[in-house]
Length: 196
Image (cartoon, rainbow, N blue to C red; front, side, top):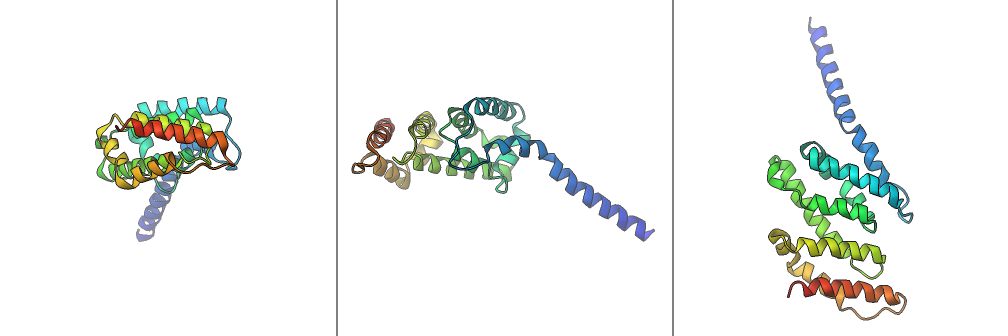
């Protein structure tokens, strides 16, 4: 009798482990699209389809997809930020920043808040001149839109974030980057002007 119970407990534990792995199997496949060589841009047409699917899932199945997206082991946010040069990926990031944390359990809510702050910091870093023009424009678009939101405005106006913005906007010219430098500075100066 005892052997039977221990076998059942072991099978239950094994089934629960398999269920957990298969629970996110399709999401793993979906977000695998973001993986690949860092220097190789993603296909813009496929990125558009990817964006539509992810945004649809976020809009309709928030409670199921957000724990996956904010989980540290999946690194979804980091993968998305690598491709912010793509307008479609920038739209996903923009949508994720508008998730309301209070709709979730406390532990997921805390992770969402942490990820939002990490995204904002990363977007400010994306404004540097060594980035592609599309990256700077998409990061600026997201940050400008977020300025309308009081909680994001408070995060953006923190001393360290403002210092990064000013350093990016008013740094000395870099002759190697030429017009790319000027575009980056112009976009960042426009962002700062919205604070005034």
